[in-house]
Length: 285
Image (cartoon, rainbow, N blue to C red; front, side, top):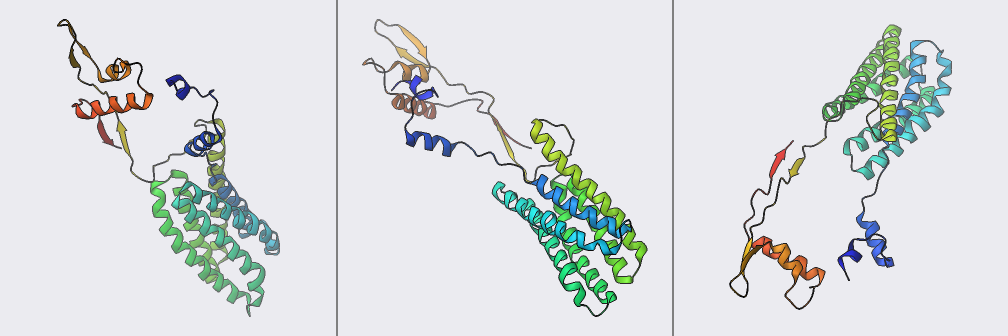
């Protein structure tokens, strides 16, 4: 088998070679963040409009299916997608607020009528939102290593939970309205994040800006040059010449061309035994 047959993609391949080639190639996974952010933003927008007072409280039944499917199911699907991508923050964030919306839908649609009075239901919902505000504060700390959009989104979500919990707990409709306005801003930020993810990946370049930071420090290995010393060979008749190990391996031992595997093995063995200079350096970014 020649080198051309090894490197030419058009050469006939067996089924085993094709499967090995497909397994070795990295799988390209879609970004599920757009789906999760859009689902959260849509469901939150309708609920925030009701909290502001633009729609009456009797419009809550319209929030239930939207919160169940867009706020709950869509975010859980996004969490599953982030799990495949190995994104711990994405799994935790989308999974948590997907469960939040499912629990909120269950509270508003099933449990709220069971309370003895509307005031008791409001107090229970205030404690419910306060618990989620505490968890949001903890997740907000991690957003400083993710992106500016998510940092602002979680910061706004903390304020929304705080104003709604205070308004429902103390029976202050003004605080609830402030929480509703902040919720509308929250949906705008969510729509922006979803649009940024979709447009930038679709166009394959930066179209909508979003200041991002790597979730972990990575080492960047850069090879500047590899210089191998020449090996001096005395030829018959007293002639001598300098040849590199790769040239010697390619020439064989005089009995015809050596197999490709032997040539690569001999070349790498000689390189390992000889000192190399300027291999490169490790830059921590």
